[in-house]
Length: 118
Image 1 (cartoon, rainbow, N blue to C red):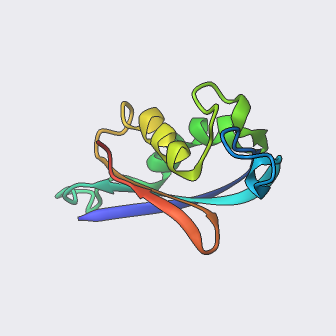
Image 2: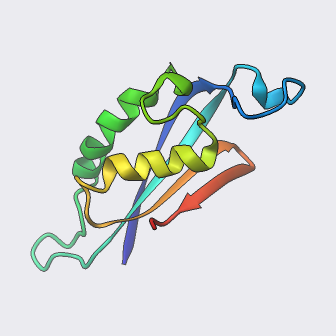
């Protein structure tokens, strides 16, 4: 069974590998929507896989590194495409959240990425 919790954060970025004429080569911002999925079996006594508040607390330090920042300045995010940002988020969370199974990151209401690890 999977559970998920959704978060939002606002951040700016630019994509340095693009031609100067591409609109994403200039600094711009997004309101990102992040959905974190964990997999497990509901506990016999608790009835849940993971307390949603515990999940929120594990994600909080990651969001603090991203929210209202220029993603290009975050260590490890020199080219912060949606895809590479999702991998970065996974890498930050997986050690503290072994049951992590999926990271979904949307940078616009209609564009995003799903990352399920290597």
